Figure 1 (cartoon, rainbow, N blue to C red):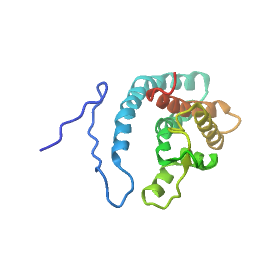
Figure 2: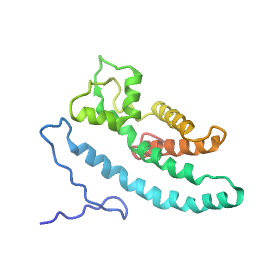
Figure 3: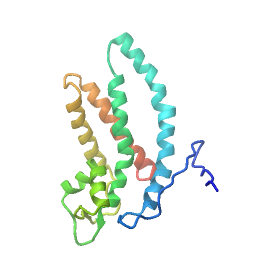
Figure 4: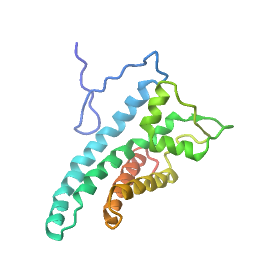
Length: 187
C-alpha cells in the first residue's frame, strides 16, 4: 500500500523516504529528515516568490545598462542553498563541557560540510568538540560564512567587477540568515 503524501507548510508537499537507521552507519536519518521537512518548503517558496521574479529585472539591466548581473545571481543560488543548510552541520560536532576544538576545525565543517559528512558517516573522521550547543546558529559563524563566500566570489569573478562578487556573497549570507530566521535564532 503506497504511503500517503505528507503535507508540509504551504502548498508544497513531497514524500521523504529515508531508512530509519543503517547498521553500518553511525548516523540516524531522523534528524536529517526533520531538517529537510523544516527548510526545503521555505527555500522553494523563496525561489518561486522572490528569486525568479527578480530575474527579468536583471535581464533588463543587462540589456539597457550593459551590466551583467545574471551570471552572478544564478551562481549565487549555490551558496544561497548551501547556506540555508550549513548551520545544521553543527550536529556533527560532539558537545563537551571540558573539550573545545580549535575554530579552524569547526570552520572546516561549516565550509566543507558534505565532505566531512562523508568521512563522519563511514567513521573516518576524528571528532570535533564544542562547548556551545548549536554553535553555527550564531551571527559569528554567519560572518565567517560571508567571508568564505566572498573569497570564493573573488576567485570566480574578475576583481574589477566587485559588484558580481558582492551579489554572490549577499545571496550566500541571505541563505544562512534565512536558516537562522526559520530556526528563530535571528530577530
